[in-house]
Amino acid sequence: GAGVSQSPSNKVTEKGKDVELRCDPISGHTALYWYRQSLGQGLEFLIYFQGNSAPDKSGLPSDRFSAERTGGSVSTLTIQRTQQEDSAVYLCASSQQGAGANVLTFGAGSRLTVL
Amino acid sequence: KQEVTQIPAALSVPEGENLVLNCSFTDSAIYNLQWFRQDPGKGLTSLLLIQSSQREQTSGRLNASLDKSSGRSTLYIAASQPGDSATYLCAVINDYKLSFGAGTTVTVRA
Image 1 (cartoon, chains in turn blue, green):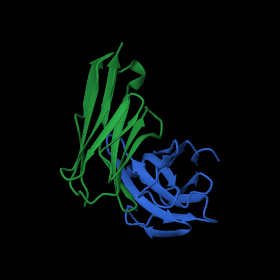
Image 2 (cartoon, rainbow over the protein chains, first blue to last red):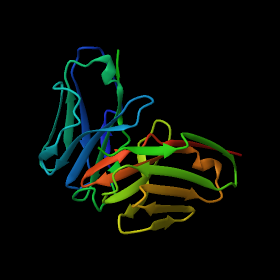
Image 3 (cartoon, chains in turn cyan, purple):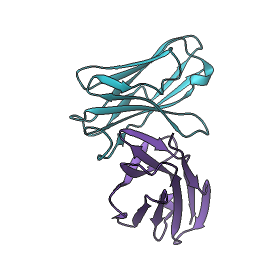
Image 4 (tube, each protein chain N blue to C red):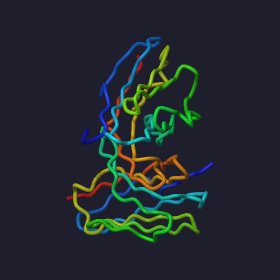
């Protein structure tokens, strides 16, 4: 597609429920990133994919968080047993190869609110 | 660990003034540096990408400089307009990972 698409744009859930956030990167972009932006905080790195592999998942806050990427394209970030501190905007970005020499393009984000 | 700092945290200027936004980083072994703009409730829009071998990059009214040895970058916005009101984020790229500053929130008063 022309840009990075994320869905849902807004998600309100109850504490303890599982949520899935989807990212559809720009066609042909092999690198995909998930970041989190909490209220009043900077952007926090979560995970990096190169193709379907995740060479760096060091930013995932706990084992309740997981992510996968299939077909070198769509990625899903799953949060199990959500907690109120998971409330944030989850941003996905993609680039050709790695971001070392290429512009990163971000999606509009998925705003998650855990009640 | 790369630490990125942006000063000031907020800036309010009258329309027409030039804007100067500062970014500093602790690890100078960077691949490149990218400036983004974020409007309230929106994602990030890339403004400029400066490769580590470059000293500056220009796009329209925007000019970004990079001094890798001192760990600094500056974003200049000439002749500011109310539409420039947004949060500006600096991101430093080491290998594949971006480290972000907390941003400078700019308000341009008409």
